[in-house]
Length: 303
Picture 1 (cartoon, rainbow, N blue to C red):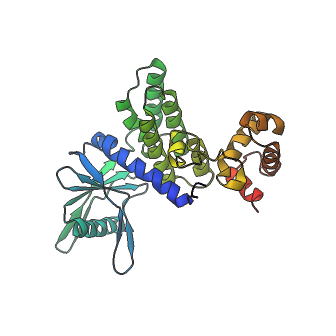
Picture 2 (cartoon, rainbow, N blue to C red):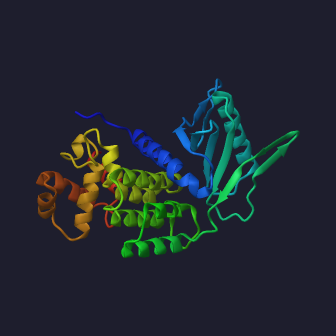
Picture 3 (cartoon, helix red, strand yellow):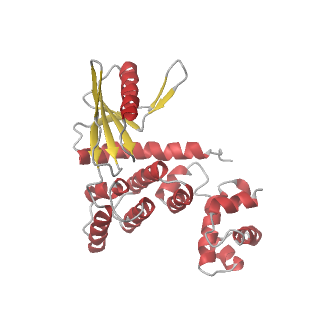
């Protein structure tokens, strides 16, 4: 029997894949010079048992380190102090110089990038994305996809739309980006699709919560990213039912067909599942409609 993964382990696997792809493909978009040699651990644990967790940390080919942080609100002095602590311990650990870039997705007009205290002077390099319109970027790339002129190089701005401005929600931008990636599935290798979806998943975990986060997880769970996560034997929850774990994915499939007006017998036949399992899911779903929150249904079935 395949080993059970905790939610945190699954998320960690996806985020590590996202990090490496982000470094290889998206750092050049921000004009960060040099090539990445490898991705380094982001947790710096000190003797006083205080854990400092960076968002991303890369070792470049020239031996220097690039520390990347994501901020959705204004960068405060305390943020700069926190980044300074990260960098100090990272430099002490690896004996290499660190340059910190902060991707700013907030609406703040003025970005604080320097901290002067006593004789010390610390600064970061801010990368502000709010000057770009996510809705416009998605519309343009959607048009290119329909024309068949979308290339892998165009995917950088698409994956960064959660950090941009726009009228659409971050959830809708992530789902919109996923649709474009799906449309280009024949032109993009499976490995690249997995990593692109992992970047979107990482942004969802960073900026979304509650129902919005669950919606994105459901959408990405049955994709190339889902296959990567479950490659050790349990792919996206379509196993023998909720009793063997990963039932949330099966519940999501059943609910999608319920929304289309299909009855339990039809759903069981189409999914090749035991009718009794599907009937139980449908019965629990009836108590959670019309949103059909898959995690809530799962909890009811396993109460």
